[in-house]
Length: 211
Image (cartoon, rainbow, N blue to C red):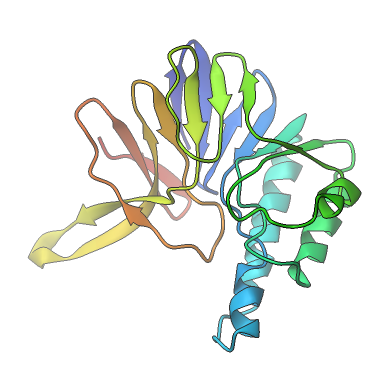
């Protein structure tokens, strides 16, 4: 785990590709993309079903460890149209009925509003809390520090003999931050960090400062 100070608030960067805001007791997750593997399998593309289980298991472990007041989902909770994977998320939600779940809606969040309501998930287009503006798509604001998802950021780590690997990462700039995609079956967009931006790569059970 690494941590950063942003606008007077301490944020913990978790190896599970989530963000913990201790003072507010808010667990922040972007781009879970539940149902994506099932969606691909229905289209005839062989994707292991264990992918969906890993998403739920990692979320369950975080909820058990941190006991957050709220889980703030920064968009793309569910990948596409309703399929059986939704029930796994509903079961997770019901197992933590005392925790508030809020979805800042993203471009993939196309389920009927009744699905979210029945699962006890409150939906908002954005969230302003403390010094932060939470959105799905990155945006700019003169007042608040923007924390967003959508991009699925990654960074290329280079080694000897021209070897390299792309790892998911957190990026913190002067005006905003990007969170890695939480989902186990998501692509990565390789970033070219600008001067002054701080990047933290997620490698297994550790988060490493990159820049």
